[in-house]
Length: 76
Image (cartoon, rainbow, N blue to C red; front, side, top):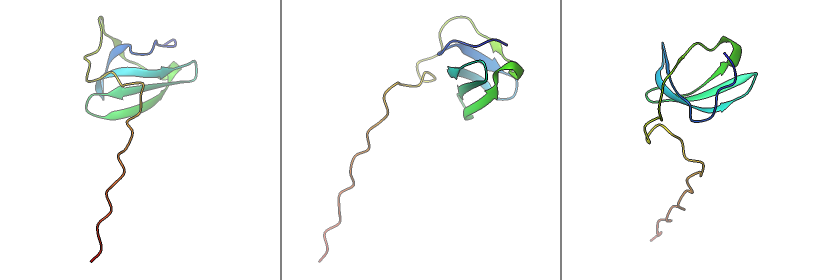
């Protein structure tokens, strides 16, 4: 398999539906709907490429979520 484009929608036999988050000639990273993020050797990856776009819930956002600082408990 060749390098995949980011946001390519696909189906993997074991992990199900996923979206490519990174891909180069060495490694491909995919975010799966029910199994989280998995990394594969690109040349060994076997998956069915699906037409169209992935559902919005599968496409990871480019921005990281900023954490809110926790409020400190008042000591008596």
